[in-house]
Length: 231
Image 1 (cartoon, helix red, strand yellow):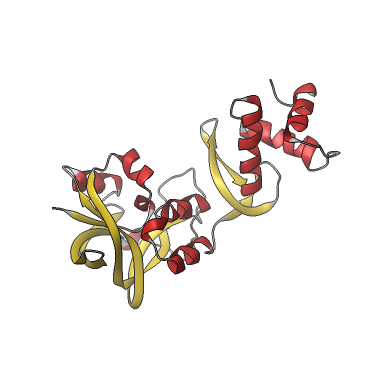
Image 2: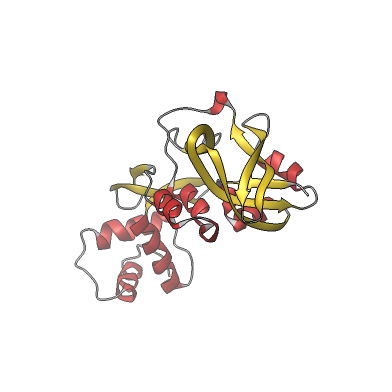
């Protein structure tokens, strides 16, 4: 049985399924002698240069929490492809302390040439790790949740905030949490997703400097009346 220790986005079951990585079991695991860093540079031109991805570095006092997967057929081969083995990450053997005891397994460590200082993760990235909450200690979960993340100008309200990246019109937009939630709620009212551009127009023309509305429904009705958004 091939075992794999995940400490980054693969802590999210949805990500594993999306990548087509098959596994037969998973359990809580801790890797001692390493610490978690977000110093792996992004290979995506659509992301800001300061965005960092998860990596592990040797540290005698450190611990990294994650998930130990028992991989299915072709699981390791698929992982090598999705983790860009030999170009971005090296696959290394480590020993973790799992619920089942001490287990030898594979994990991935960023190659030196793709590592840089001064990088921070996006909130999107942190949320993928937090999706594995049931396998993480509360202390580790809280530390990740409260860690410094990428800040930028929100595409909808122009405020400097922690942002999440949302894809629209074949590009990524940085939205603060408030605008992201508003976009989802407003879309529910008209029963279709609002574009980032529509969300920005409603936010700037009716919310930030508007008269105030008694309900979301009233706000959307006014936006439709003014032809800010289409019904």
